[in-house]
Image (tube, rainbow, N blue to C red; front, side, top):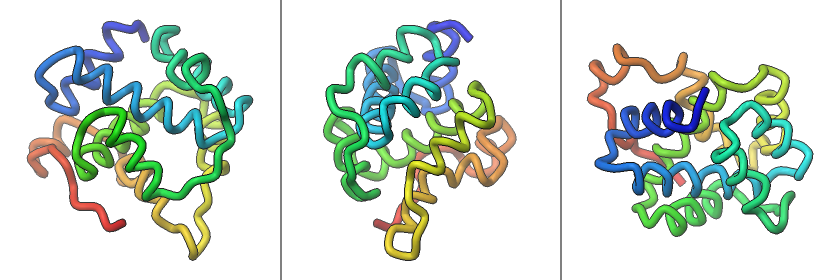
Length: 153
């Protein structure tokens, strides 16, 4: 998938008004994921993405493998994107679902393995809610109306 197609699809799915807002959402999610997972896992995951998008997970990240929880993830995404927390959480879910469709299953499984799903921090599962529900689709959007979903933090 090429850069324009990737950003256009994200813009459509998130119903964002312009490319600037779309790139901020993509950058916020991918940079923060890149900060959370080890460098090798970020490289593997990003390898199937357009080069301009790949950079957000790899070249734009100065320290991979940081330990932070779901709430901090959403705070960081929200701050970078300049969006409220509910929008940032929904944007991250949609972007991760799109990545799921583009990368090899083994690389996506590696991403999931890097994020804890223990009883103490089951909230990381929220990042994958859309993917686990069967992914984004036009039919899904028509039934739910799209837009941010409520998230418990």
